[in-house]
Image 1 (tube, helix red, strand yellow):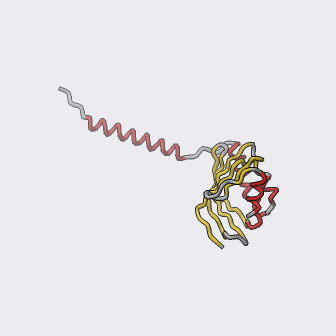
Image 2: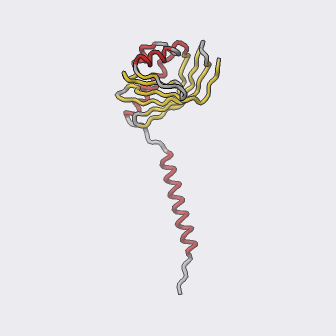
Image 3: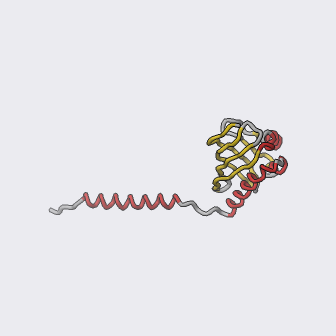
Length: 153
């Protein structure tokens, strides 16, 4: 009668499976370099954020597609279409001191950035959050902001 040490085989199998799993996690943790389209979309969003302190409503609206949408916070309904966008942006544009982009990444047509927005003469002194942008044809189709923290004036 032949005996086999099955405990050793199981340990070998489990340890090699665990090593392969860890290697797989490490591979997925490393992000791929952005494609040319993703780089272009990131540039549009970064240029858009940099334009806010100039307080030029028309310049800001030029970044949006005609059917663009903007949701200022996760609790608000989005402003949809050129007129609604203009009305929503007009409520804050002259109070923006800066949009400081802390981190940005893109996946296909989506750009996500973490920012600190600083205001003057406004109900908020600063807002920290995440902006999620959907772009098509080099224009912002949707921009939704999600609050992490804010400081009241």
